[in-house]
Image (tube, rainbow, N blue to C red; front, side, top):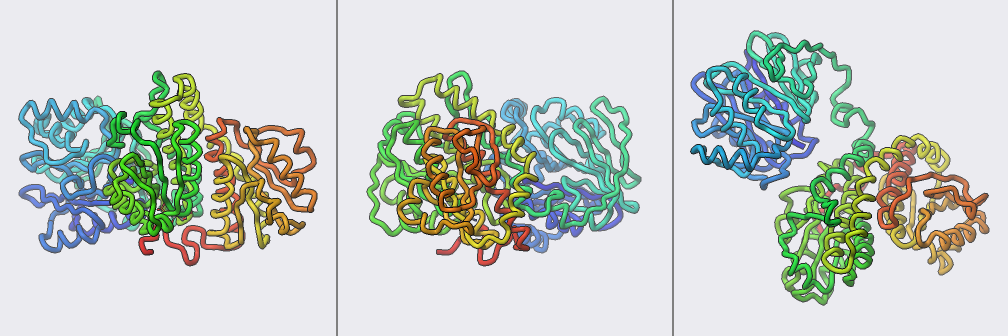
Length: 608
Ligand code: AGP
């Protein structure tokens, strides 16, 4: 997630800007920059990578001035390089802009600006703003910004400075949060209050359409017709720690609750309703190349391996291509059968998992086409794969993966849809899948509204020593994922199993001390799951079931039940995973575990 900080007052701005950027680090980023006004002009320093790199660049060539803006960039379009880092400037270096959001009409604006002689230095959408503002500048920076924004479609939170209208920051908001900090004879602009809380608790939240003008004598807010907008000052009574988690007790909980938006973001712009297929721009494979694929290997670790198991069923059912799922740590040391008609899909939230990266390199060295399903833009796996699908789920801070999992399954469904429609899938089937995908965000919201019901179940099991998770078909991987969530944050031993496998051993474990979670949607294998529930109940096991409707056949068999909305069989893992994430979360909290940083675990296992 990008971050914005700005300052105008009587102190040196650079240290304050860097401090603000550091406060925003938790949001995830991959490059950063500052621009300050030093009396003669605008000075800019930028660096790819962490803020320490930017600090070094500034130490090498210090910047001065008591007016400045700064930015941390989470790359969505254009790799995380120095030239793509914000701020962005016009050719004459008189205007500097930092921007959060997406300018949807940037390519047409860029073309017309280039036709009028503007020379672009980056691959970003943001740079069109600096050239537009420069072109529209006739003495007043706020006038030029308002005129420029009238030409922009999309979302933005911006801050702008110019050596042609000194000692001023112009900020504007549409769809991307931005606020003003009111200090003592100094004013701040920020995308997140954590950046400035050390200096003031008095903030003014900007609304969409607001344009703020900050100078040494104060700030005012106008709308696009330049009429004054009255704003109230809000006093912040949160502490920094709470703010970074958006008011949630833990990042994991915040990320669980982000899933209606993150699943939407994974799908955004990638579904063609009319043609009943998916549009995946980053595959870097033509339809002919996709049609030549005669076998698929999916390789990953942990939660990503679980989504791979769902992908296997999706691709075999929709695209009728044989799929092998391999633990990356195993695949890399095997002598795998790979040809130039093999597609190797590599799934990794971080894009840096050592085993997964090694597996990717192994598959590439044997001639496979490779696709990365990755969340972190510009990560090693994303860069080394031949093509890919970014999850666009935003930074996942909690070590236990939640929103990345649901976005991975969503992305795999889109890929299976595209491949299926190239082969045997009908347009009607395709439209059905798109309709079911489109309903997911709302359905996830409905589940989250009942989080308290899951917390009540967690209260019953916070002292359990063992858990079994059982599912069939698409929900065997859901069982594995539910078990992993619980064990990795609550330290309770938990196992996921195909429900039918119970009779081949694990049923010996069942007694009244063994809670068994069944994922039991009303799908193609529901009746079989009912028999497994009966087997467990007959041995006094405690049964918790995730269901999608009132089931006469389960009458009297369930100790606890959590209802999820109905959807197509292959999408039930996305909905079923939400209560299972919450169950693990609440049990772990009730056991006093460190939910965001569980013992012995790292967010990204970059070593073997
Ligand atoms: C998931 O909750 C775990 N944190 C872990 O299994 C993780 O999924 C695994 O390490 C793979 O990480 P990646 O997706 O970043 O490659």
